[in-house]
Length: 457
Picture 1 (tube, rainbow, N blue to C red):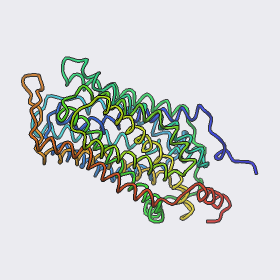
Picture 2 (cartoon, rainbow, N blue to C red):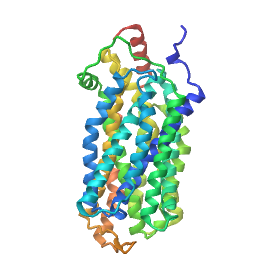
Picture 3 (cartoon, helix red, strand yellow):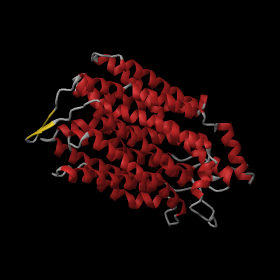
Picture 4 (cartoon, helix red, strand yellow):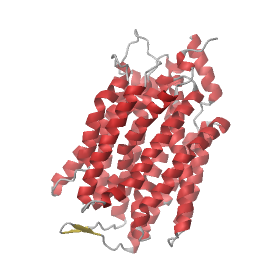
C-alpha cells in the first residue's frame, strides 16, 4: 500500500528548519531556568523568597494560558495553517518581552517587585503563544514514530546548542560590560533578537502536512475529553515535570554552589559547557538507544545515571577541577535524554487520545505538556528561592554601583549543597517511577495508527 505524505520521510530542509526554532526558544527558556533566579537575587536585588514567589505566580497564569493556547491553535484556520501563524505574529513580541525582562530599571521596593512580575508574565505569555503551536507541529509533520524520533533528534540537538550558548556565553558576555546591569540588559536584547529570528526561520521553512477534518467541530469540553482517557500522557507529564524540576533546581543552584561552597565562580561557565556540550553530542546516542530498548527505558536509564552523579557530588567537599569536569560531563550525557525523550514520546500520545476519543487535539495536549514543563521551571525557582531563604542565604550588598558578595554561614552552605544535590536526586527517583508507567511502545503505536486509518476506534 502506498504511504501517505504524513507517513513518508521528512526532508533535511524541513528537519533543520523545524529544529532551529528550538535554538531560538531556548534563548528564552534556558535564560529563565539557568539565570533568572540568580539575576533577580544578585543583580536586581529582589529577596530570594519574593523571587521564588514571582516564579510560582507566573506559572499559575500558565496553568490557564497554556491549555487555552493549545485549544485556540487547534481551532485556527488560516492561509498558513493552524500552528504557523503564531510563529509569524508572535516572534517579535517574544523578542521585545525578553529584552524588557532583563532591562533592570532603577526602581525601589514594591515597584521593583511589580516590574519583575509583570515582565515575567509577559515573557511567559509570549513564549506560550509561540511555542505551544511550535511544539504541536511535530505531530502535524509525520505519523511515523521513528521519523518523529529522528525529527526530535534534530530539534533537541539545536535545543541543546541553544542551552549551551546561554549556559556558556551569558556570564562572559555580562563580564564585558562595566556593570552587571549593562551586561544583563545586553543579554536580554541579544537573546530576544535571536529568539525572534529563528522563530521566523521555522515559519518560513516548515509546512503542516497532517490536517484536521474541515467539518470537525470544536468545544471547550474537548480539553477534558482529550485528557481524561490519556493515562500515558498524564504519567509522561508528571514524570517530565519531576525530572525538569530536578534539573531546574540543579542548574540554578550550580551558580550558588560554585560561588559560595567552592569559591570558584569562574568555573560556572566551564561547568555549564561540560554539561550542555556533552548533552548535544550525546543526542544521537539516545536516539539509537531509544530505538533499541524503547523510549521510556532509555529515558529512565539516563535519569538514573544523573541521580547517581548527584549523590557522588554531595560527598565531594573540596574542589578538584578534573573531578568536577568528569562529573559534569557524565551529568551532561544523562541530561541529554531529558532534552530528547519527552519530545519523542509526546507525539505518540496524540494518536492514543485520537484512538480513544475519535478527535485529534494535539494543541491541547501540547498546551498541557508545555505547562507541565514551565511549571517545573517555576517550582524549581520557588524551591530554590524558599530553600535559600530558609537556610539563611545572604544576598550581595550594593555599594555605590558595585555588588559585593557576603560570607555565608555554615548553615547556608549546607543548604546550598542539599539544594544542589539531594533534593534534585529525590525528584529524579520519583520521576523515574512515573515514566515507567508510560505504556505506549512502538508496536502499540503502530497498531493505533493502523486502526485510526482503517476507522477502527
